Every structure is written in structure tokens, then in C-alpha cells.
Image 1 (cartoon, rainbow, N blue to C red):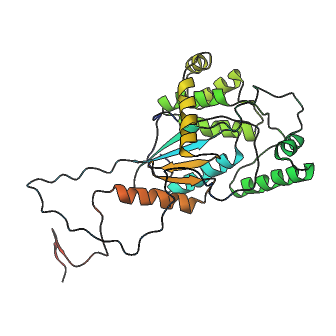
Image 2: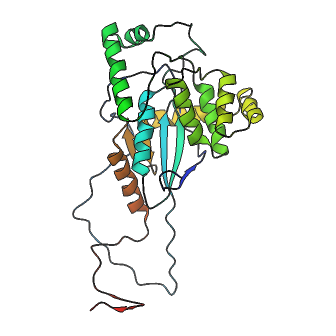
Length: 297
């Protein structure tokens, strides 16, 4: 449970990708994706009401299922860690249950298992984005500032770039044990603060054990082809949804939010989805009525 909200980690149907070194970039507005997902709408001021049908002899209102939030992200993405903090803030004190599932996305699937020791991250970013060293350093400095504002201590000077495909496979395994969110957080910390190589199997097993997973089972997953198809399917689904950048939040399979959006907007989308899923919606303020203890006078 997160901040009083029931947050259940589940595996869900396949969707997404992998990772590159942290790619600090200025936040962009919502990505214009070719997608069937809706932007979060403003509340309607002229909602039309339909009369309730005459009651059946016995009417049972179906319970509202937990609201589902799927997040495509990569463990080598600093904005994804920021987005996770915004999500956690958005979930604070919600009066209903939300199911969170982390989906796979690789920022750069071509990244090797590791890069040579002593790789100059600033120059690597400058080359990748076609900017100067000063421009790349400014990107890093801004990301550091955003991290601090969100209680995160980015250490880009310690980052060890590496392929994150196996980390995504391990996250799928963690989902089957109810530990996906815990492992996601541990991977973020390991990569962007501790300077651990998250493509290294020994490191991944150690991190899995730290969040309560069995070492032998984790090693067996990494030594096999387990969850390979699931990761690739999630990557394919991301392409189908038009997702080109992460984090990307999908609420109830209906509303899409691109980037590390503010907590207020994420919460608005979740509340909107819950309202639409409710079998009965109250209209207006409470008026005088009678109850077990008597009538209002």
C-alpha cells in the first residue's frame, strides 16, 4: 500500500523496451503520439443526467474494480524516477485502490552490456544530442536540480551505462512475486545514485535479494530466456500506442500522460477514470432526507 492507497503490483498483458545511460533532457510537453489514448479532459460543467431505469426486484451494483495505471519506463531514465515520485504523491490519500504495473521500455536497445571504464558521460551526451560539452553539462546540472526538488540525489558522475533488457526481465519476475515496485525503486537507486551496472547479473541478483526475492530463482530467470517475450511484447505495445518517450502513464487503458507530469495532473486522470468506472454517481450536495436516526427538520 502506498500512502494509504492499495497499490497492487501485477504482471498484466504484454507491452515495451530498454535503456541507455541517463539521458537528462529538459522536460517536454506532452508528446504528440499517434494513439487511441485520450488526453485528460477538464471536468464537464454541463453534464447531462439520464433518468434511472425502474428498479428491478433485486438490483446489485457491481463493485468498482481497482483503477489500473500502467507506466512505461526505463531504469536508466532519470525523468522516470522523477515521474515515480510524482505518481507516489498523486496516490496519497486516495480513497480507492489503484493497481500499478511498470512496463518495459528501452531508451536505447543497442546499448552494449557495458561501456569502457572511464567513459566521459558529458562527452557521450554531447555527441548523442549534437551539442557542446557546455550544453551537455547544462542538461546534467538541470537534471540534478530537478532531482533535488523531488528528494532524489542523482550522481551522474558515477553512472555506468549498460543495456537494461535483463533488468526489465527481472522486473517481470518480481511482478509475479508482488515485488515489482520495490525492485523498480531499487534499480533506479542503484543506477542513478550508487553507480551500479544494472546489466550485470550478479548485481541484479543482489538487488533482487535486497527487496525480498529468492536469489536462486532470480539467477534462474537471468540465466534463461524467461520473460523475454513479455518484455518484447510490451515494447511492441508501446509502439502501437505511439509512445516515443518515457515515462508514459496510461490510466485505465484510456488516458495517456507523457513525461514526468505534475502529481496534480496524474491524480486528476486517476480520479476521472474512477468516476467513470463508478456504477452510481452522486449529483449535487446532500439535501434533507430521512435515515435510521430520524428525518432532517
